[in-house]
Image (tube, rainbow, N blue to C red; front, top):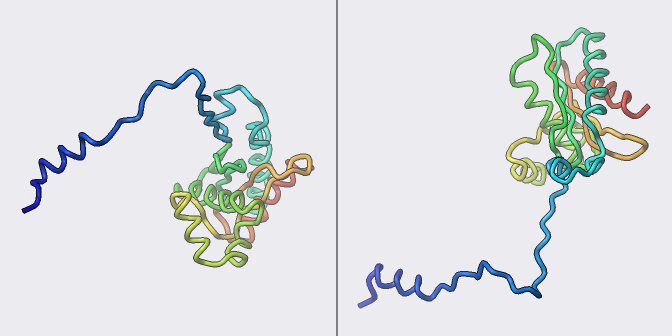
Length: 182
């Protein structure tokens, strides 16, 4: 006969050596560091993400102006290269889910290092796109309407827009990107 579950568990518990919480003086301390906007807030370092709130607001203002010019109510989101939301806006009358969709478009462009969200769907195999969406908790939207953001010639993030037809979403996002680039 085998050992009872209780005695097996007791035997296993006794054989497990818990790691020491003390470190020898000669052991180097581990350095954990995350390249995110949170890291900037904690360390006070500036420019790690490459895009500031001021930049993001400039992008959003230009995009909203273009949306008004085209006669659409839209939402706009700006993310950095780590896919952290920098800023977003939803015009009056825009569907309440649209800000989440446009953030997903911007995330798609950021994770593909600047490939516009609509182009990425045709450029990468479907299985890979599904895997990336899963890795980012479903926050990636592979539809047209986001473009990369460049500052001083350097890729710094992405802007997504939505609330109109896909080609108009991208036109609005591009207007925002142009405001930052030039």
